[in-house]
Length: 297
Image 1: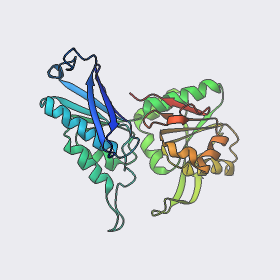
Image 2 (image 1 turned 30 degrees about the horizontal axis):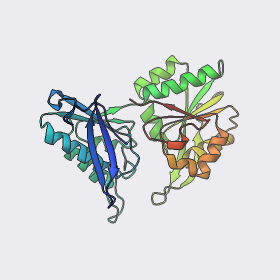
Image 3 (image 1 turned 90 degrees about the vertical axis):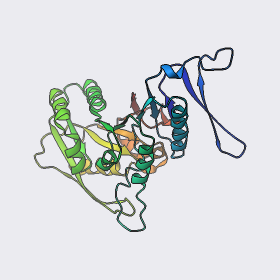
């Protein structure tokens, strides 16, 4: 979903008979001559938001950016791209592997944005490959999730579980640790998993319980849910360490396809809530009774 963040301008998409896109950028309201009610020359800066639904949208983005460049060559354009696609393919293992993240970011860079805002990137390589990138940490979204859980369970201890050592180290930045401490959350666990690179299947999973005290309720924090497989392993491993409290899940990104996967359906049955952001459109699943979505601006 491509959005033009400028009052008075809207993007209208349709299809020609051969299936190609018809792209229109309309002013609102139009004057009697059919021209824009807004003079583009008055614009100094424009932000375009891309809430990723499918990869063909990058063509729409390319068309829109070039249209603005043609009509206002000095216009500064920024891209708000909360979710960076292809971040899983941040390296190649075999000669046959195509480094799609690199080539995707090359295309983004070719549009010469003034700045590119991304949220909680799955891989640091994503940020390294994008020109003039600004990385937003999900601190406010995670804080909001914890505050809700603590309000609903006053007096009950909350333990945070990260799926692996990498996410444990990444999320426990000084800023976020300060937020945790201010909310009285001070016990953090992480999972230890072995994953098959080719299939992405988890072959073994356990929770590192070093320094473990009373567990209470548990908040599992991850960046993305695709099939629910990692979260499923986390929930099952909680049983192995005799955790009996409520289970909550936070993921900055939740893919719509997860709702069609039995693993995620099982997770939904086991947990109290799944808390995510609006970065990825969820369509008909946005009103799921166990889903809480924080708006991304």
